Amino acid sequence: MNCSSFRQSLKSLQQADSKTRVILGTTYQSILSNYISPLNVRLTKNNTPNLALTEIQGDFVAARDDFTARFIKYSQSLESLIAIDCQNNPDDFYHQLERVRKEREKLSISVEKVNEALDDHREAVTQFKESLEKKND
Amino acid sequence: MTNDNRTDEEIKAEARGGRNLVILGIASIAISIITTVASLLIYHNSGDIYIDRSRPGFLPDKSENETKPDNYTFSDSGNITSKDLEEYLKHLDKTIQSANNIEDPFSSDPLTDESLGIKPSERK
Image (cartoon, rainbow over all chains, first blue to last red; front, side, top):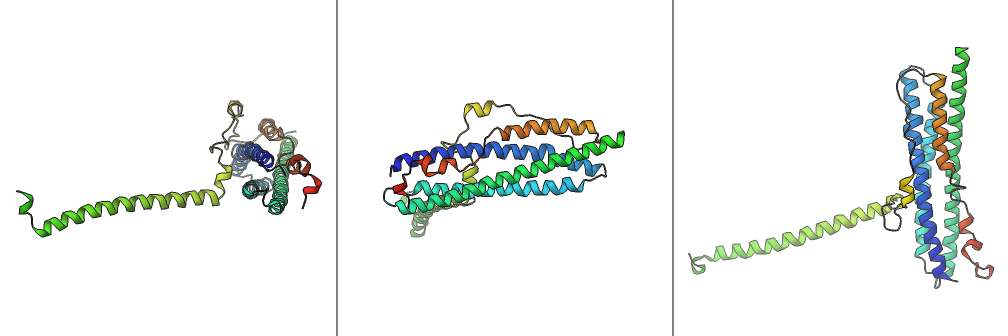
């Protein structure tokens, strides 16, 4: 096994993942604080709260929090993998690699869940917009 | 007044004062080491270390800092019209696009045996 090469690849992956998390994390935060939250507050202030949109906000927050927690778990297992001396402990290295793969898969699923909540939100807003247009016609 | 005029009690008090000063210094250093270690442990175990990009080696690229964010914020007051929501969706799509620019985030590809260069004979 070329351990120094593995370590270098994994460290590069760690840095790339960190960058991806920041881009996704800041985007999710921006969507929540600049769009979803103010829209629901405005609807409530107008005494026309939209139950579907409120529920979706809860789903979005839960999905985003799950994404952050999954990223931390994945990063911890990746760091443990990098720390293993694969030259002397190839079995440990491979078992840990399997764990990291599973954590990465869960992380990927958590991103999909955030996207699903976003799609639901977009759909609900579009329906709400159409209902307003019908009222005005 | 010379040193010879001092009583035994005064000499002992001075020695105690010096010793206490050394103890105070050592205690201060010990407390700061304990609190620093405790904070680093909390920082590491809470996972905050993994979402902190101010660490060496994880600092943002120059190009990342140059990307201009969409500063739009939907107002949380006033009546809502379909036009407001149209504007809302337009900006929302733009913001979502910045996340969608990352193709298949956290895909399994970089960790496959092939990507890492692990030969079939080395698999356990």
